[in-house]
Length: 194
Image: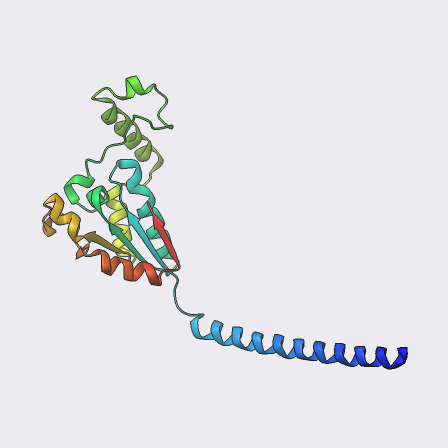
């Protein structure tokens, strides 16, 4: 076989490869377009699991949830163990900021461990929140509910802590089991553990 014949054969094979590649790219672009059209209008879904019930840890799930809801997202916050105190009307008004081991509290742990220091740290933070005009925990719970966030109370934790359904803010979804929470988590675009 001559060099010219080999070059012509290679060029034809290369042209076929390019044509096949272009056809495949067009096919993939059509599939992508179809997928985007089918799911483009569906809101994003976010699930947050709130496990901590301290003053400072009540804010992150509520701020993230209400912000995502403002964007039109489908948001569920599943509260379990100490995180359930965030939804408990009475207890949420008395959450404390722990001074021990908190890197933002500038005092030695030996001082922070004194019995009254959590109350002092909490009062200082509450004063700062008031001065800055930041929403309270109760206000953020109400805002979250008003913007369509589903705030869920774990059934097992309710039983463990002997909490009555009437103790929670109005419109909190009570008696939610882990299986129900997992269903939403499995479908969520974003899952957070706070």
